[in-house]
Image (cartoon, rainbow, N blue to C red):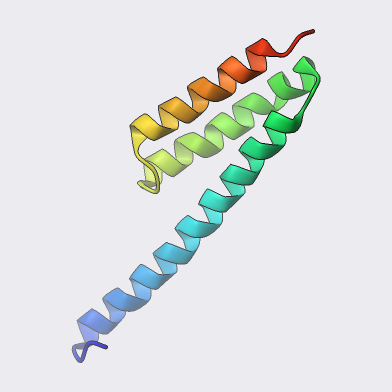
Length: 85
């Protein structure tokens, strides 16, 4: 453990950010899993903007890379479009 007060504060901030990033990452992964489980196209299309927004927020915060966010959204869109009406 660090001895300087500024370093102790940095450790606290880093732990807080880590917890926040883990929470939002897990919540987004669960949302992606839930939308993949939807069998009807209208239901999936309705939830797609919400999940895409969650993914964009993760990329904006720096929790995931912007290219990973783009790939996740692309895969999600392909999967939703592949659902038969």
